[in-house]
Image (tube, rainbow, N blue to C red):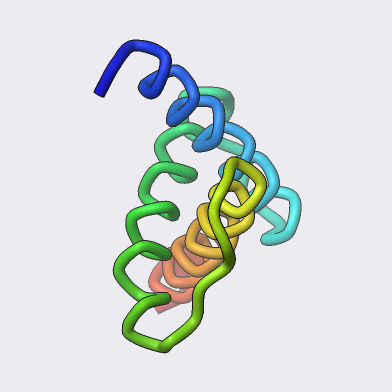
Length: 84
């Protein structure tokens, strides 16, 4: 993985984490937190979606959408666990 790929990966993670924070109220982690949530969301989506037979094409926009959906799932799970 080159430095350009790493930078794109971090930017996609930041965007996805920020969007997920907007969708799931009560979560504001700041830039670093959003990047981490977005990256974890991308891993969740990458693991879960193929098992469900669900895939959104390729490219950066698809990566942002997938990572955002994964990050939303992550934040919803965290929200449920915080209530328990």
